[in-house]
Amino acid sequence: MSFKNTVLPVQTTLKSKGRLLDISKPVVMGILNATPDSFYNKGRDSDTNSLLHKAEQMLNDGAAILDIGGATTKPGAQLISADEELQRVIPVIEAIIKRFPDAWLSADTYNAAVAKEAVAAGISIINDVSSGSIDKDMLATVASLQVPYIAMHMQGTPETMQQNPQYNNVALDILHYLRNVCDDCHMAGITDIVIDPGFGFGKTLEHNYELLRNMHTLRMLGKPILAGISRKGMIWKALNTNPEGALNGTTALHVIALQQGANILRVHDVKEAREVITLIGMMK
Image (cartoon, rainbow, N blue to C red; front, side):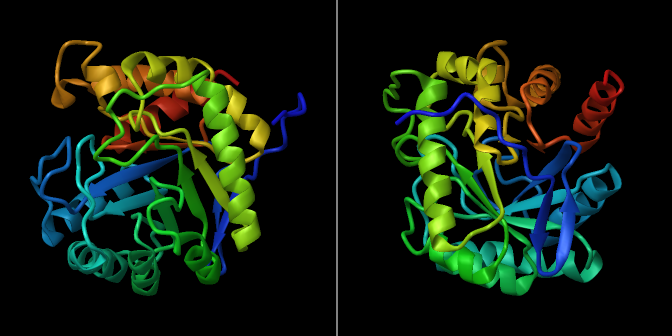
């Protein structure tokens, strides 16, 4: 497979349920984990009331999107059932929509059944780490829901992805993969697609930095790019610290991600990410 040496104009809005989200300038997606075992908060403050309070803080800090997840996808995590995931996320979605009816919410899910129920509850975007590879009904379901779809690259599954990941050329391999995924999405009837190179998902430390250095190559697909780097192992392992000590490193890599063409930063710390976007904007 070959690519023309051109960069397509990147889509500047996302359309969902008759509303438009402007992403002509980079925006922040805040992470809300309704899970008992996420890699960063480890289940702390994952109840509905705590997440509602956190959602309010993130919106006040400038988050354009809130990403709600009920299934941990950290390395080694096992897949869970749609029913278990729904029990975790639907009360959170409903509570946030009741308090903030205009908020843009995304559901971080690989289950088509969860996507369907989440959109019915108020979700505007589906964020799928598997790009439809775990649940073969996902693409058709998202197309029928007529909401934007975030398609991520992952080598293997969360349970297996860090077991000796290998690439010929990590950036080009992921470019080919995401181009094929975009083709599949278009064939299914999905019109608004965001691509995510999947930092930390089936990549060694070296793979992650090679990918970040060359993330600009994904721009030739003409799709908005989401960068999910926040507090990940590629930061804290390199700095010999832990997720709690990785905020400064996260900020440093967010600068590079924006320079490489990221349109959405998926983060734990909204205020700090918004400040990076503001300061990078001053350089233009």
